Amino acid sequence: TIWSIVAAILHLQNVDFENAAAGKVSERSRTFDSAGQGGGSNGTARIAHSSVKTVKFVATELLCVDENSFAESLVCSINVVRGERVTRNLSPHKAEGQRDTLCKHLYTKLFFWI
Image 1 (tube, rainbow, N blue to C red):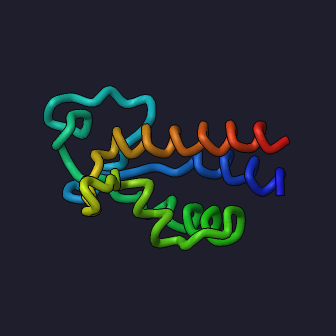
Image 2: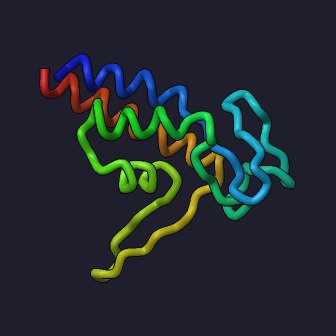
Image 3: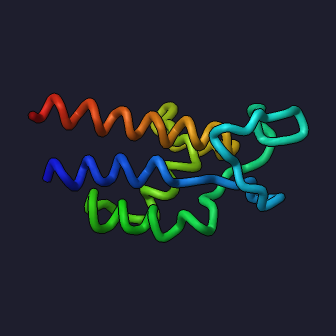
């Protein structure tokens, strides 16, 4: 329903990511330095422990999609090149961008549907 999609967008904005190696939470307002999580290959993102239940709820209850695939789509970039699936792990900063892009896409599709 419309309300499920709106709720999913709002809940997704509360999802945080952390560096899988350091366990350091990435915040939207933080300035990323060269030793942190800002660059292309600095750190691998994972969903912060405090956000795991939120992601599971959004995937299964609001969007009715597989929770593992949904979680993977937030922290990985998946491309198909010449018929081969290429998965690239994202940094926490880029995972936030991935999350925001997903929210924008859901919002756009919602208004095209209406």
